Image (cartoon, rainbow, N blue to C red; front, side):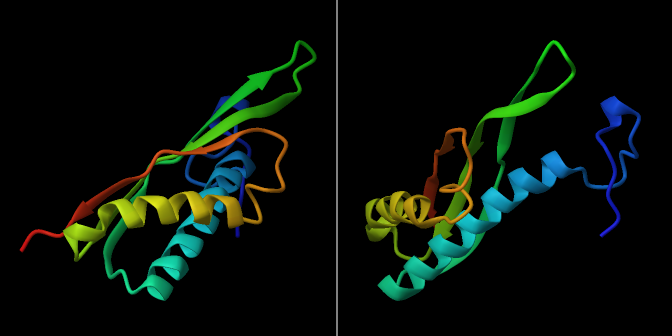
Length: 118
């Protein structure tokens, strides 16, 4: 996968940078866990999107680090009566995520679960 540094560091803005890939990995790990848990619970997911964002801090010497990442998954399910159950599964998925459990900064999950329009 061709990569680059961030455009702010004179990188190619058409290529992924390592920071974007880390946030994407956190988002993808959560998505795979929640889809697995929903399938096991018999909750039919018809749509899923995430607007994950990370906050970074730059040190005086030019070094940087993530200070937090927040996932904002929007999940659509077929049974509106199971929204609370699906929301609870997001917390379980978050606890299972290998990547979120491996980083040294907080990863928050703020899910929204809605019912599919009939």
